[in-house]
Image (tube, rainbow, N blue to C red; front, top):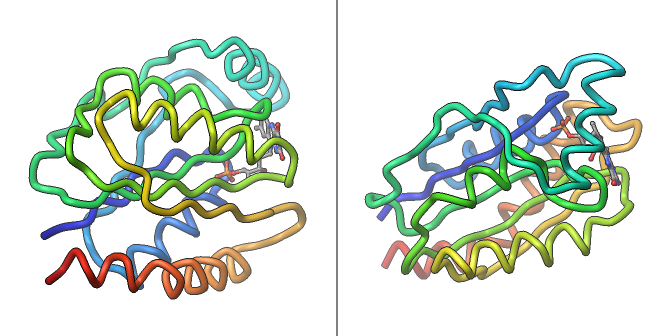
Length: 166
Ligand SMILES: Cc1cc2nc3c(=O)[nH]c(=O)nc-3n(C[C@H](O)[C@H](O)[C@H](O)COP(=O)(O)O)c2cc1C
């Protein structure tokens, strides 16, 4: 019985959250990297456009063997009121058949419900079952805040994950 914590992060907030979730809940931690340049103001603008259009990108790792995991915690920042191109790309090919999935998003607080709905649909299209969701507002928040948010979310989700460990 194993958890996988899988996330994309451009500026580190989702990463801090994912790292804390891993510390609290155990399992493997894998970062999905976007091979397009997302740095600086042009990277930001390209990100807004690509997320808005739902464009695919190139990611690394490009595929993952999920067979040994029962629970996948999937984390992304909200971009253009939706998920990021990296996570959208991952969700186009992965096999989540029979997997329980927890979705967690970070954002400035705009469009996160829409992002979660889109993610939920994509996860279900791949055969996964969303059992919990979490959202953290990151505007002007730093590492310590994200760590505290990770502890809080893990506390909320522990009961559900505890059941899986039996
Ligand atoms: C290209 C881009 C688009 C974004 N769009 C939104 C948005 O629609 N709504 C929102 O609340 N925050 C938006 N944000 C802010 C991020 O979701 C937020 O800062 C997030 O916590 C960053 O996570 P990260 O540090 O893991 O990359 C956007 C950020 C970027 C770079």
